[in-house]
Image (tube, rainbow, N blue to C red):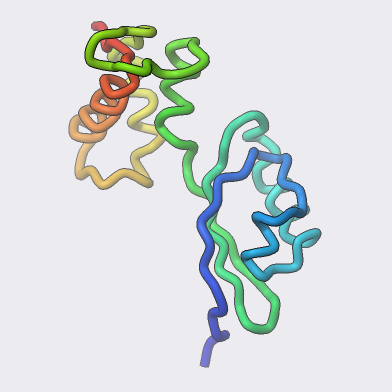
Length: 137
C-alpha cells in the first residue's frame, strides 16, 4: 500500500531561487529540504517563473513536478516588453513572429491540451492577442 497524501499544492516559484516562507508552509513539507531540491532541479531556469505541483504525504515526505514556464512570461520575453496591454482590442504593445510562436508552442507542448503543433500554435497566438501582442509572419 502507498503513502497517504496529505495535500497537493500548485505554486509558481522563481527558478533556482525558492526560499522558505508562508507559501511553502501551507504545503506542509520540510521547507529547507524542498528548497534545496527545487533550486538544484531548476538551476538552469534562473529568472523564469516555474510552476510546480507539490504532493505532500502524511509522513512529511514530498514529491514535486516542475512544469513549463507560463505562456505569458515567454511571450513577454519574445516580444521584449515589460507587460501586456491594458486594452488588447485597441492597443498593440509589441510583435512576435510565427517562428517565435512555433518555438514557444514546441516548448509548451507537454503542458498544453493540444493534439498537434498547429493547434498549440493557435493557443499561443490567442494568448498573444489577449496580451496586445501582434503576430507577424
